[in-house]
Image (cartoon, rainbow, N blue to C red; front, side):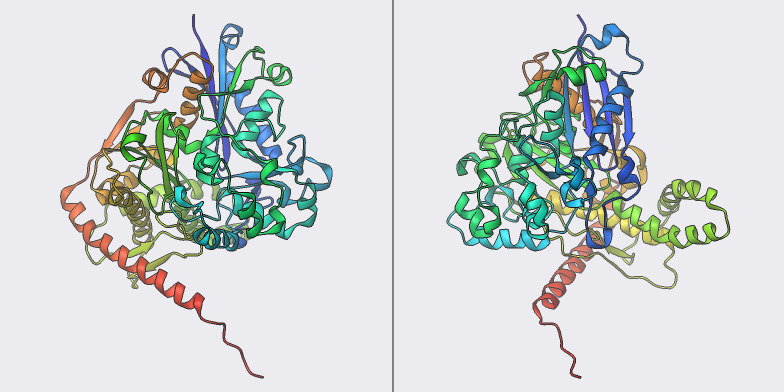
Length: 561
């Protein structure tokens, strides 16, 4: 008898759902929904690194994407859907009341960004992250030891503390805090009680400093020493975490009716998009899976018995079972990858857009916006690669890994009057590749070998220029997964295990994971030049970091009247 599962992938701009035949691995259909409020830039302030998403965008996306995936499915297929699992970006926590309702769904907080989910790339809590690091490094137990030794402003505790400090009303109303991947999975079951819903091992271990060695979360004494505003919150959060092979529960009658599904559909414990994407790309031991989109997440997996004794510096955590149960999941990444190219597109087209608008020719803009990056990539691919080329630093949104520092800024060096848009774009693509190489080198330096590199995501699927540059700079072959919906497909694999269709991830992956349809081989003569350019990248990055530290340490000058 056939069995089907649904994987739901909440990205930065949209949510995708894919219906998968669990026996054959065929992607039968998919649905997509773009977040309406996010698309309008609502509740965000890029100048202040504030990025918030309204829970209504998530609820509308959940319903519309799944309905889209099921639109062409027969009643027979719908009745054979056995499981649904969800992945989201992260860390993306939000404040909730005692029933688990996000505060922005209450009338009094409907337009308050602090009552919404705080997106992964929100960096308003840079100061709070630094306080966490300073306290952890002098505490009896270093709670950052399993997250690379550096806590990030992109993560759970920093965002919570920042919000509690700046918004009295939210502080009074927030009973608890829930990650997006936990809340949206719980919504499907009808039980959003923050004290009883199952929390993702991935989110807990990589972002909330949860570890079995600590008996769960950091101690009450640590948290209240950090700030008394955190008093009592630990008891209103969680002590246990769960891997993605576990069931969150079964679908509620309300959501079963809304989606046209049977009432026995199992809802799996949620996770982050990169981790489920790695599952969908058939990750194996010592495989580095790069999820390449607006940012990157780099997933590496290895047996606990082989590398579990290591403490890997400067990454986004090492967590038992965060990718596949029983294996050590390691995470790293870059805060901007595709976002870097999007920034350059806005830089080039911004004045053009203003001029076209003044001339009443706005209709030309969508075509220009869609074609600019492919046009630049085509021209950049024809440029010679020399040791004297422009070198850029990819820290326009700070540095995630290695060694998180979201106060860092980007740079472009070596410009002259002949530096046109294609040459600058080329330097930005190379910068993202240099950043990727530095991450891989850190793993190897710390004793974790990398035996193959796999790429998934929008950039990996759409830009052969970027992928060839990445292969040349890293000087390794890079496989690209065939599926355009690898994260959603990975969520479907998790749903197949959580619902009991397959007893293990290995069996589910063998049947359902995406094959590869491209391999980018490094070109030896080009790789040799990039070796020298990469050294310039490292030198320039070190200069920027040292100079910024020096400037930050100096007191601001005062002007005498």
